[in-house]
Image (cartoon, rainbow, N blue to C red; front, side):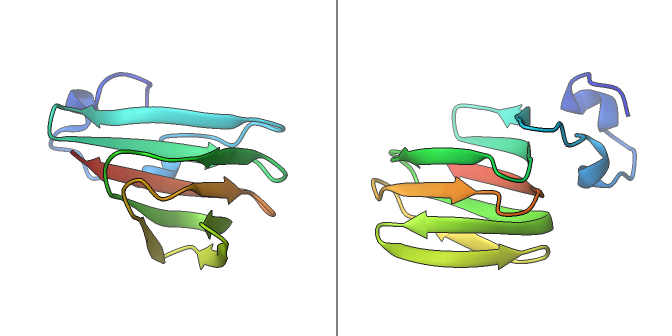
Length: 110
């Protein structure tokens, strides 16, 4: 898969995990949809990397595609494995940690 817009994938069957490669010591992302009503972003988070605590004004759902993510919402910690999902409620502080590498699809509906 090349790194062009989502339109380049229209009509193709593809595996989301093939759209991004892990990079040692980094978090890589690719926005697939960025519309007024929603954003859909693919992330590859290398082991040991974190997305620090933050809030968002809209609900979001993370779908772990590969690996295992450790997510924190307020003071509650969740282990989310490949094939599992977790909702981040609007305006609630949350964070993510790659205790092992993981890929996720994040959908935020505005």
